[in-house]
Amino acid sequence: MTQIVVTLENGADSSLLRRMIENMKGVLKASIHSDSSSAKISETDEWLNRLHSIRKDIDSSVIDMDDERTRYIMSK
Image 1 (cartoon, one colour):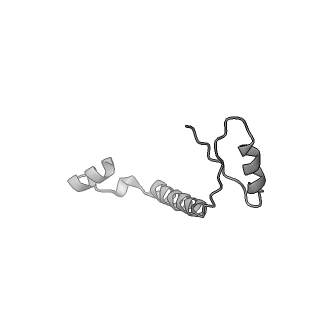
Image 2 (cartoon, helix red, strand yellow; image 1 turned 135 degrees about the vertical axis):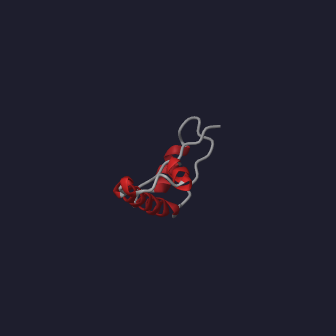
Image 3 (cartoon, rainbow, N blue to C red; image 1 turned 60 degrees about the vertical axis):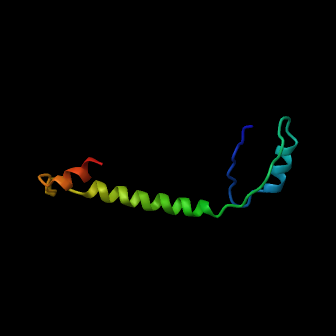
């Protein structure tokens, strides 16, 4: 069995789309799930983007690479 996940924009008529999909040949079942985690995902993406920008701003020339622990962390 194969599943297709579709994300609808705000204001889309999910009931109409579900009925249309149910009427297509080969479709066994169509269901609607409201998911508030999409907002959490975008917040997570923002947070990760901020972390990546911080990482880009770090000047590696000031890091003491003679320390064994620092070398280990920087290798990750």
